Amino acid sequence: MSHQQLEQSVVDLRQQLQHMKVLQNFTQTLSQQGENVSEILWNVSKDAVAHLDLEDCVIYLHDLKNGELVQCSAYGPKNPYEREILNPIRLRLGQGIVGSVAASGKLEMIADTSKDLRYITDDKPRLSELAVPIFVNDKVVGVIDSEHTRVNFFTPEHRDLFVALAAMVGSRIGAARFEEERLRLAKQDPLTGLDNRGSLMSDLQRRLEETISTVAVIYIDLDHFGDINHVLGDVESDKLLRAISESIQSNASPGSLCSRVGGDEFVVVFDGDFLQAKIAAEKLLNGISKSRSVGLHDKMSVNCSIGVSMGSRGNIAADIINQADFAQSEAKRKGRGQLCVHDSVLANRRRREQRVAMELRLALESGGKDFFFHIQPIFSFPQRKIVAGEVLARWTHPEQELGVIGPTEFVQAAERTGNISNLSQLIFSKAQGAIERWKVLVPDFLFHINVSPMQIQQDQFVPDLLRVLESAQIPTSMIACEVTESALMTNDAIASEVLNSIVRHGMKLILDDFGTGYASYDRLRRYRFTGIKIDQRFVKGLLHFDSTTHTIVNSMLLLARDMQLTCTAEGVETPAQIQALENMGCTLMQGNGLCTAISEQVFEDLITPKLSVPQ
View 1 (cartoon, rainbow, N blue to C red):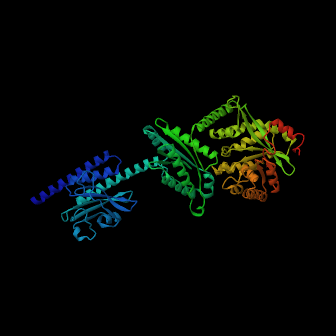
View 2 (view 1 turned 90 degrees about the vertical axis):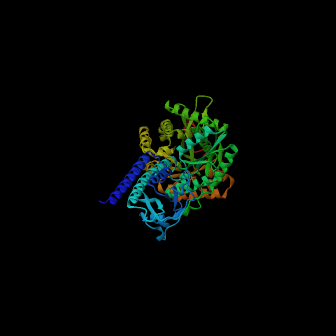
View 3 (view 1 turned 180 degrees about the vertical axis):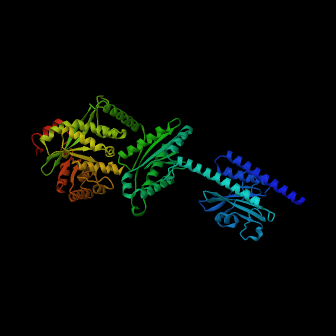
């Protein structure tokens, strides 16, 4: 080996050792580096490349949103100051040598750029270029690009080193992006892109700890979205939810946190006073009402109920959220499609509801001695004969402060606390002895019992009911189970089996509050209902000689006749309503205008001598 060759070997060896040292140091640095992509890129361009005695290095990343390559970090003339790129350029895929490498996924080592028409001058012209793609999961995410003023400067050793650097960078970028996505999903609702409940609670708590004034919380719950979802299907409903989330974001006050906390529930949080909160809530209410689904259902709109609460420094996030949620529930009680503010009156009502729920639980655990039942008769027309009766729960609390608690109040409490099944079983157990006696007096009589949505989701409901009937020797033909459409909005498979089982065992199945949902006819077609009840709001409309209401009620009666279903008008209050219903051919009616819900003894006295009401 000649002296010259020996010197060249020593130079090559030193260069290889230098490259190995750079790779070793870079590997150690990467192992200590955080999960920030920007940190990784600056580490490559400023620390690794700077130790290779190169003139410059610029790293590009692919901006997926704009479809361009963007200069993200640099070493050399493009970066005279700390982490600042002078005049950063953007390249399209396929544009220039860098764009060609990104498009093809193949590195390029250009010996003389003056002979390559693709070459694009950046800060100044150079004669050699080495561009190496960065891969993540077999996709090009960026390019490491280095240039030199000498022709044919870059060697195969440079190429191999840059390939190794690009591989390590790609691996670390992939890990960093995976972690970023994991953290994003942990804080974000995957369907709408809004923050989720966890992110909401932490952000609200932080605001409550830092605020010097007040924080507004707006709780949004879509009205009848279960019905809408049934009509549209999951795919179209998801599109509608995304449209609603976009409406919320566009109409929310600047600086607001917008989150989705449930299937059709959203919360908006921002720093503001009561007046600002009310204005913001009204804007959100109007914006959501203009949201539309897509495709064949582009005329279907959705309304919402909104609750507003205010928090101040030191408050607990969960308490403020619960207050807004309670106000939203009050808005639904008042008729939906409106907003309600949590104030002292509502706070007192909430305390009462909590008290009733607690007392209900205690009463049920102690055997429910303060509960009893009433019967509201159902009359057939034109004979005005009592042919059926609805079993209704009643509760008189021993403490004077509570006294007689209305059924709406304690039934809602039972549903909220998951005690509705226990309450239903208790009332029926109290009534079964009387029904056993009455089956002799009125063998063809029909007793209506209300079945809650929770019971419809329990596959043991029918077997448990059958055991009670068998022990009391009550024929199943004397029982009619009333269910509302809301009971059919959850697990369709279980609901279908329970409802079909009711009919299969000889009981009647009645769809209560008919006409109040989006898909009443579809329910009748899919399930084996034997009768319907016209909701009292339609019966009430007959008082005002509303032609639309008359048409709706008449259509219900015609539908029932065509499908061979019984049809009962409930909530009948006046002779005028009775006459109007009779004129339309309604043969079954129920309401205080005929007979209020009465006690066991009064009902027995009524049916014992005769089965009709004196004229």
